[in-house]
Image (cartoon, rainbow, N blue to C red; front, side):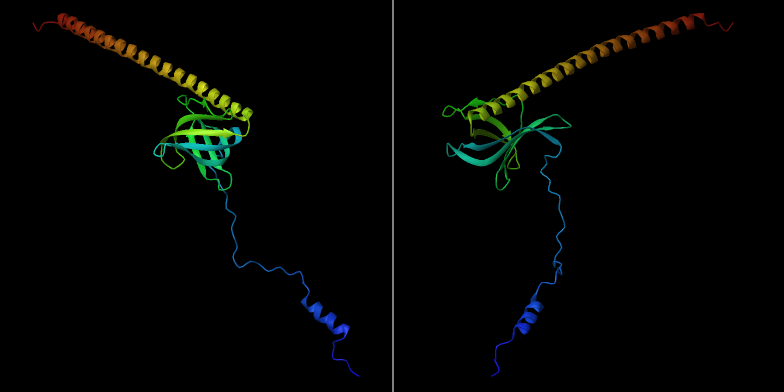
Length: 208
């Protein structure tokens, strides 16, 4: 009696037809590679630590969390200026972005030796705003390292600015001296010219 079920050869042939032939199907849309820039390409990293940042809300009179992520101190290769930049870990959104200048004074937070506070003119939101920040690290050592690095930068920057100010003052003083000397020289030249002119007229022959 003939069986209605397919024999093994027919099954093997059917399976063989469905096997992957190794052919690759090109995607319908080709995505071009795009270079991602962070704005930090021309800066050297002086410090990179994990931390949590807070800002003081004056209206609510309370601290508000700004984000958790990596805080960096970056020195520009051309200008030598140093800025503090912090991005949120997951979204990479900037939560702090300001220059490290001599006016920045770090203070230990009264409630934790892992935290410190400071005022800064911040540009994280696209406009310059005075902010009061508090940053908390995972260890006392990291907090101390952060404070020492920032303080070292502010001191060196202050020395450079003071030296530049002195050089400008010296240059202004030299210009003032040169201006006085030039005025005296001009007056002396005028007197010499007048004297020379008088002598020439005196020596001119008469028309007799």
